[in-house]
Length: 189
Image 1 (cartoon, one colour):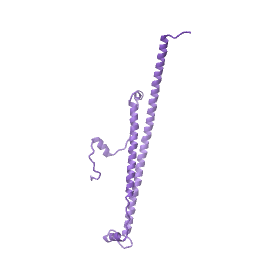
Image 2: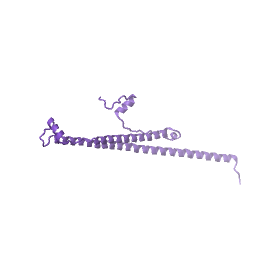
Image 3: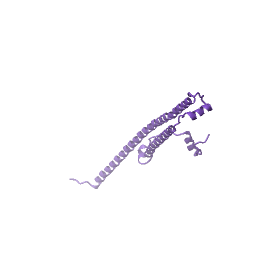
Image 4: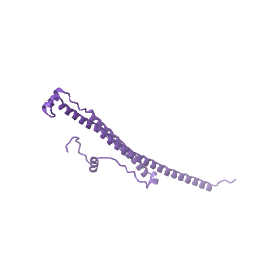
């Protein structure tokens, strides 16, 4: 039986080390590409989810807002009907308004309908802001994966994700100029 000499053992060790290094690099490459694919798929799904929820938000707000509009119309119709009722009062006269005030109880406009609209707007806008923040967080993770070592060695040619966020003209102007001095909510323009 022949014993292995130092040179043979060194060659075997070097081949084993190189093999482990190649296997490690191959494994890191697969891992980086898999993570990039996961983030890209998550990003695309969140982008679509944001679009769907934006559409749903406007539909919800529009439908809730129609309730006070219809209620106001119904209120006006009922009030007009009372003013021009069987008491022989013509609509819009002082005598007619006095008769309504003294002889009948006009319908009351319910402010809870306006609160419902306000709550719908607030909740839908908050939901959209949260979804857009989550979308941007996925983009941040993807950018970090593409640009930091060692994954950047394997993902150098991968294009960055492009987030489509929804803002307002006012917000865009404020960020462009770096100023937003319009703090009065009820100022007339």
